[in-house]
Amino acid sequence: MSITLYSNFVNSAGERVRIALALKGIAYDYVSVREIGYAAYRKINPQALMPTLTVNGLPIAQATAILEYLEEAYPSPRLLPADPILRAQARGFAQHIVSEMHAVDVIRIRRFLHNRLGVDESGLEAWQHHWFKVGFQALEAQLASRDRATAFCFGDRPGWADLHLVPQARKAIERFKIDMSPYPLLHGVYAAAARHPAFLAATPERQPDYAGPFKEPSLDKPEGMW
Image (cartoon, rainbow, N blue to C red; front, side, top):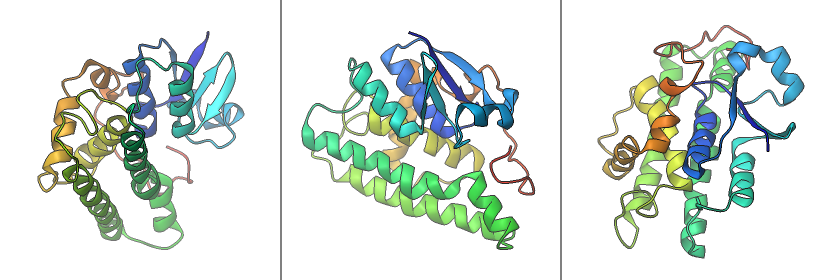
């Protein structure tokens, strides 16, 4: 089985997939989209969004689809809880991050706001902070409503919800200077993950294309380009 992940070190959706691969102990090759360029990458994935996983040369686009494939093709260890209710809650938690937070904070959205609608830097900062706050408040409340406290979101082992939360929290803390003190439960999961080998292996600093502390890309470039 030949598995290749196309991503880059700062891509948080790619980090989710890297965590899943590490948790499941799946060997794979890593190809940096930053290094091969978007023209070459579009031939692999016409969506031109990261990441893409190829399995024996066949591409799978979109991180959620990739994660679902990995859970089905490599069921042990499982990423989703065994209990159907907890499983649905973990999916809902993750989907909130994917659809309600990540989808509105990516660079192509900020470039559209800036280049097409004339939103200045202070407006973009307000946009980012608003959606992080709304999202983290909801997720913190969801964890607070659990029947019992656990080291990770829905259990004492990391899984589906955690691999979605940690890259989003990392982006919030490191790139957008979001104060996580109002979200102690979320920050507790983030801190626990920081000591876990699978999460450490997936960090931006451990990737082959890591080029030092990340600098936000120019807003003046075309959408989709770094």
